[in-house]
Image (cartoon, rainbow, N blue to C red; front, side, top):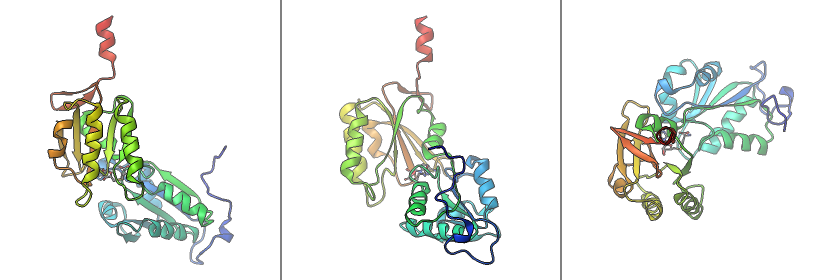
Length: 273
Ligand code: SAH
């Protein structure tokens, strides 16, 4: 598909559902990844998109975290599990002629709102320009804080079985465990959901030594960031919650001082020469 204009469908502004007389000009939906939480990790484009928007829609804590960018704007905040409603509100307002920012944490296209926004725009026949604004995802922020553990091929797996059956998640874990991928685990453990992490560790442990280095980053890039470097055998003893991303190393990952580093192989070549 050759597409230069990121527009979904071909409905003109006159035909847009919910068009409001008070708005002139076409609306637009930005789906914005705001990064892992701290101001320094926001992209310039994310700030620009929010600045341009009249309406900002998001999960309440995310809106609170960007309060410095939203003064004077209309905020539509909602709680967890209201993702579909949130997306529909954002699309409806954009279709009505507003410039709208729909906020995701990290990167909007990685376990964020970008996919749902595009699916709903298509399903509901809403033809409004959409721009997905990428952000620094939790794995990048965590990796940078821990050192350089993602230097080689890595896999990203969410342990949340709210939308994906556990059986599929288990299959993915089994597939990557033996392939020497570095593995970043998102949504690792909540108060109610402790079983998946235990099972994930057992699967990884069946294919990797217990001393395989593991980095645990909670609230990466935020003021209360905490970092732990441990190993697979001791991972379950650590504090892990829904603000944590876990990076399980591969056979080339090791601790250098307090850093977690996956050796890409440059120095092996020098030694061999
Ligand atoms: N779109 C987000 C991910 C949302 S899924 C992104 O690209 O980062 C939510 C999960 O992301 C959390 O359970 C946690 O595993 C991870 N996460 C989000 N922000 C984080 C942060 N600041 N530090 C560590 N992990 C984080």
